[in-house]
Image 1 (spheres, protein in one colour):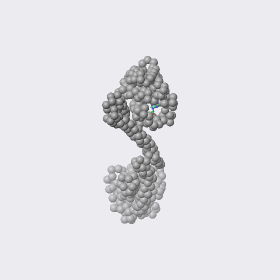
Image 2 (cartoon, rainbow, N blue to C red):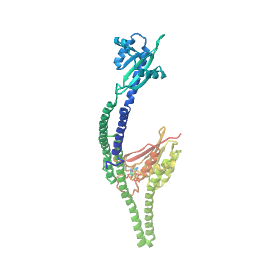
Image 3 (cartoon, rainbow, N blue to C red):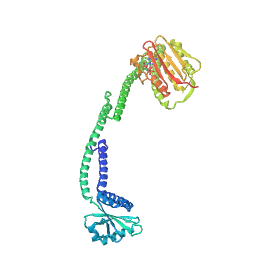
Image 4 (tube, protein in one colour):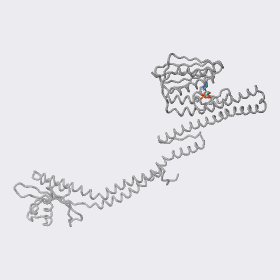
Length: 470
Ligand code: ADP
């Protein structure tokens, strides 16, 4: 994978990191440099307004002069009180009394105009003072005196220039910006590599899987999501390998199934042409074989079609209430032939009616397949027992045979499509390995509990349960 693949996790993560750092940096620059001056000024203005307003409130109370003194020292501001002509009333020392100091006329008139034009009882404004390099902040308010003329509170504060601070901050910010961008780059690369490594490994494994290597194992990583993905893929691989095995078995079985009757049909056809064409008895016997083999082929093809048919209608089951005992009796009439010709006996045990909820035609197919298997896998004991039992909310249906039984380690597999126990192929049993997978699909669609108990050489009992209908 190229690093500059714009769709890659690496590239995207890197972009997001850089974007995040950039946004934080821009915010810091704005706050610390552009707005620092404004921020400082408004802070200073508020501060001085608070001091001035509280002094106005304290005016006339005891200790006011001390308060003026401590405030001006602790806040680093100049506090003065003037009379109506701009003469200094506070602070005064002995020499000052003789000198009668007053505020510069221009300053005082500017102050008065500002104060009298103000809508509040105080005023705050900036003025350039040639004695300082920067501007000063002036606060003014009227100190009311009952009966005599008012005084004015006059506060001066220097605004420290913030330019030098801004300069230092800018230099620091440049360093922080470079470091954070560099770290963003390294960090995003590291995270992306750690994150994508297991994904890349999984991709490699998936490629092997695609090439048919079913032994591949998808490795887990450090993340739950990737572990889940690996688990799912491992599961999929297992299922795929199962399907693959079944497919191979199917081809082996089906091609055998197809080839044998086809060979027989062909050779008997040739025999009729070359030898028995004129001998009616032989010819009829040969034709019968051809018909039998054609029937066998038909059954095989029908089984395959049944499977896809059975699975296609399963989303829309036509659930009705029906008597499963009656349904079974109907199906048993179709097995009469086996009773008469081969000596099978079918025993149906049921107490009274057994009404269940289900798709009757699908359940008929289930029962038919189970009975066919019981017949097919019976040995000398040709006794097949059907039990229908009321279990309260469910009805239990069982088919028991005394046949070959199923080895324990194969019990779980017999429900798989195309699965045949032992894989050995007996000509006498024309199974295609599809019957039980149809049974399973139908019962699962009914959310029915089903299963089998079996002992080798003693027989098998297949069962399922359906909801009782009231
Ligand atoms: P088949 O067409 O081969 O019978 P099924 O899907 O019906 O296919 O059954 C799958 C396999 O399960 C059979 O090949 C057989 O080996 C085993 N099986 C099914 N029913 C019975 C049974 N009643 N007794 C013994 N083995 C059975």
